[in-house]
Length: 195
Image (tube, rainbow, N blue to C red; front, side, top):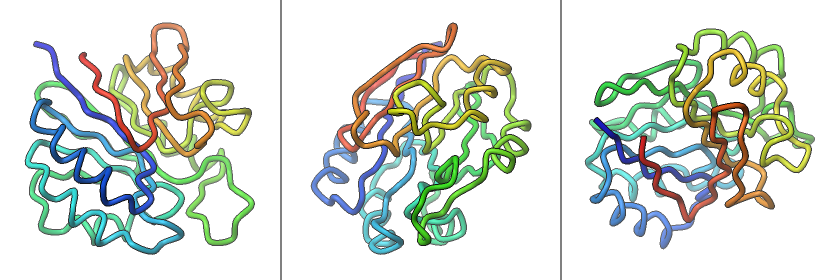
């Protein structure tokens, strides 16, 4: 059975795009948000409040503009939302694993980041063959040289069918392959995948 996924990243408080994603969610089975709903830790609640109109199962990871704790708090009362940060969830027979934050660390002191070592430890729990939802791209793929080596190694080891990411704005819309894994840097417009 195939699953239709609407995936996006980096809304950064864009209300118009959030409303468009709510509309588009009606035609899919699962919605995935790959981080950066806020802008420098501001506007998270209002952006999530708009997205709460999505009644399909929704997987969210924090970006570097919000923490996982803040995202979980903002999503309270959204029954179909699953906030993942080093965790997995099964939806319609398909496993999703999520990890948020800027990886490796960014130069900004406000940024919610993880070191490569912290990311590696959390990615170790990813089930083989799960859809991988990360905020940061894997090194050398849709990343302009800014991606994570830990994420790349996890893809090589665990072989997800799909890895969706964002974070590196100049690479929005790009895709790449790591062996059999499609890697897509999304951006706020979003994209539909069928698995």
